[in-house]
Length: 356
Image 1: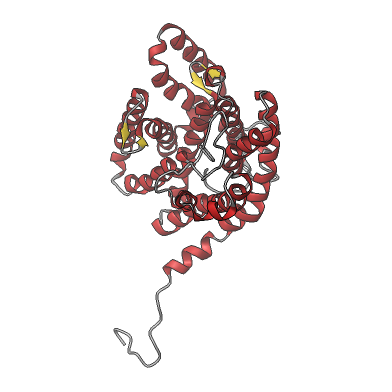
Image 2: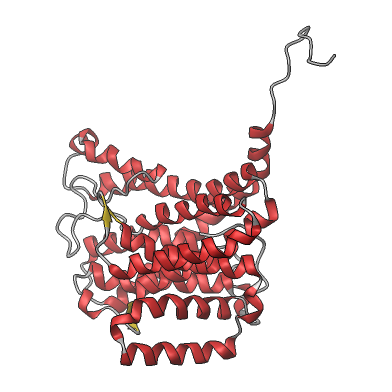
């Protein structure tokens, strides 16, 4: 869920993979109906930790993407080609393959049900749709086909915000990003804040992580993100959680953002080449939830460890296919797509051109 580049010379690719696996870990307990048992780091559930890693890295890289292009057209084309092609494939395969196979309805009943077509709304991020008729209705976490998709709308909102801030005078960038970061973290920590059917608190909390990543990139503060100080930040995070657990979400926002960038921007041999065979993190994130539900539906496993290992392996294979056949070709076409939108129609033969 970040900009397309060659293999990084840092640990960001590996850290995104860690984030994707953490989401699988947390969801394994949720989908087994055992949320009380999910692993936590200083009060933060594993899947929330994984999503926060994604958003922090995304904020850093997406602001960098804007700085490299400074062209709204090229920027938006790149962002759309990063998010939508793989999403479209996942949604269509879910509706046209997974749904008909898993549903308890007949094929005719399934394809005549409005819920089937409502699910296609996930393609344009209007409002997350989690239900397909007759699909996963008797599982411990019933009805949810892909509960991970809600974050994509939250992330795309950040994509839209970046150029709106970046085109303002430079002196305003830090104050605006700082207000956005703090405000988002506060609303997120408040929990339960909703707008219509949307959980604003959940999205806002992740916006805070995105904003911190963007601030570090915009201000050139990456040089202050180092592994050794990160150990002190980690210890302080644990101390704050032990003494003042009621503030753990606010402190987690600050501490985790720093830890992610300190570890991610380091360059560790072996680790930094995590994406040498393909950037799997987005594909794993998109596919893991439905794969988990499918395995529970057919196998009925009650072991979180077995679920985590199996789902990670299957999702990694699907993610590699997504990268090589969908994501990478789409991203390589971004220049050509942007050029299409920039072309001006030529005047018809014999039509005078202004100024001639």
